[in-house]
Image (tube, rainbow, N blue to C red; front, side, top):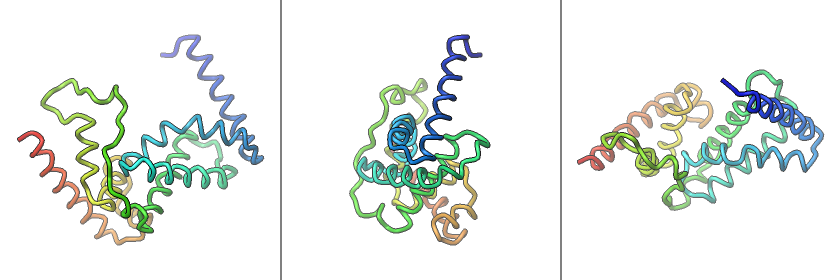
Length: 189
């Protein structure tokens, strides 16, 4: 339950977001900058699940925001704006990997927020370990696994996003699970 102060801050941030969105519809650069800053961390964290390379993640993020700014007039205030923006970012990720750009750079270790590094149960795979294992997947398999397991897309939706068959999407999920199981077993073995 929100306290009075938190409720006031929430209402102010919603009002601010509405003003920012109105400015973005008018192509106001300051409003676009404020929107970018407001959602930068959360969208970057989402994109980083697909690639550990920060330069790739920033490229994808920037392409996603450019796409969002072009389509901002299509947002109908039905559902959360963050959900709408997240869907655009997923399409930016899919485009990046569909065109083979995501396969050109060597993967580095992901930067993980400190508060997510510590698991309470030593028998469970920690968030950091999970992301490191995910980064070992081949790029397209990593994208399909993220879309299917984490984002909740169907194989049909993934196939349409990546221009692959549903059978290929299913293969990537099965192959990704097999690889993940091998790496997780090695971590605990």
